[in-house]
Amino acid sequence: DGGITQSPKYLFRKEGQNVTLSCEQNLNHDAMYWYRQDPGQGLRLIYYSQIVNDFQKGDIAEGYSVSREKKESFPLTVTSAQKNPTAFYLCASSVSETGNNEQFFGPGTRLTVL
Amino acid sequence: GQSLEQPSEVTAVEGAIVQINCTYQTSGFYGLSWYQQHDGGAPTFLSYNALDGLEETGRFSSFLSRSDSYGYLLLQELQMKDSASYFCAVRGPSGGSYIPTFGRGTSLIVHP
Image 1 (cartoon, each protein chain N blue to C red):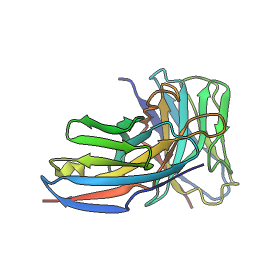
Image 2 (image 1 turned 90 degrees about the vertical axis):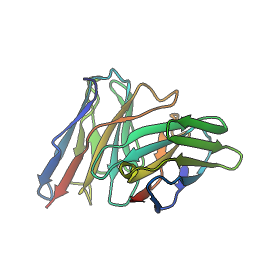
Image 3 (image 1 turned 135 degrees about the vertical axis):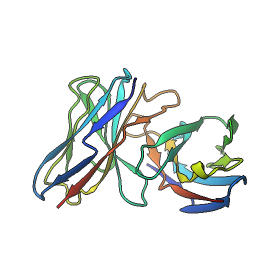
Image 4 (image 1 turned 90 degrees about the horizontal axis):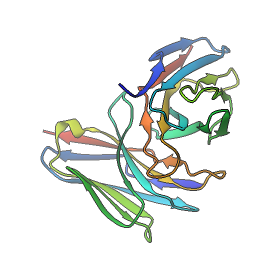
């Protein structure tokens, strides 16, 4: 089955610790994205990548970092510099940023910082 | 940049028709999309409009008027399982790319 996987589904961390969220896709998509969703809010773009070894900041990149060493993988690190990291994190991919840009989303990781 | 407005909540009864509106502001327009998200789940793509007019996909239709910077999602023959959040997303230029910006979402509550 083709799709996007995110792990873990729930993650708890102590304040001040960095944490890395996993995102893997086997859809052979070029573009990948990370979004943050807070209760009652829309999806806010953190980072996106259109091709391997290249990525761009989204609207709320401060306190986050990413890498794109492989086409299939786009991990997100939430650093201690992120002031309010508790949120629902969604990873997505699309064939490219052209066409209808249909995005396929993973199941999400709910991060709670204690 | 891009900004979108959509109602925070809409309620309807099973079997009815409901329309969820979306107005947007963008410096360049490359399409309006709609996504559905059930509580705690992943958003799923519903439709995309790049040109004016109505696109129909089963019980769901989406409309776009570029001159009015306006679109809507129409859900017919509502079912309980349609209770979810619906997001519109507009694609516009951003740093040389054309990535979507999402609205805050409309919570649709379907009553029996």
